Image (cartoon, rainbow, N blue to C red):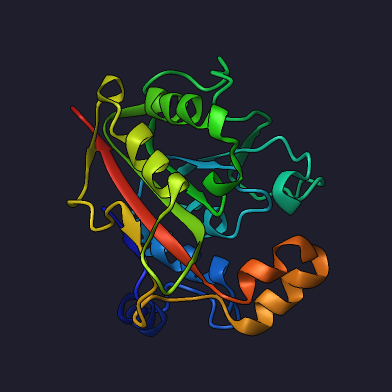
Length: 229
């Protein structure tokens, strides 16, 4: 699975109650993708990468063993204060550090929401290797990744990098579904998007991307892989 989240999916997730209908911004859309994949989970060990004050783990912790891997240093405008969630263990680390607190092959699911786009290019390979390391054989890796998409087809280096690192044969990861994103990326009207109001709000926080936001749509990649058994 390597595609963009589509409006038809989002509408069906809203209808099924998989997301907070008050959360109209992109993270709410991404939450719905992850919840749609994990809603029936029970008895699993689930690891969220960079979850901050996690919205999704609150929904999963009652039936699963959940771990949030985050240093709470405010990276990517994330939180610096830990909001304790019952049933969720905090490991203050980053993926790519190969922290011994996260044992090899110890999780059934590893996921992230709006995290991978913040990881520097030279750290991305180690991040994927570390996530694959802690995943059990047969376990799933799910990621929702922000991306600004233009209307004209263009090659986006990060899109190719995510796929290249995920397909590293040393990691033993297979796609849940055949990838639908190729080398050239362009916006389609059926992509679920962030609102213009949200982008305007972000301009007040980070005006440096204003020119990009004026000519693109802010969408989300959905990535899903399985570790070979």
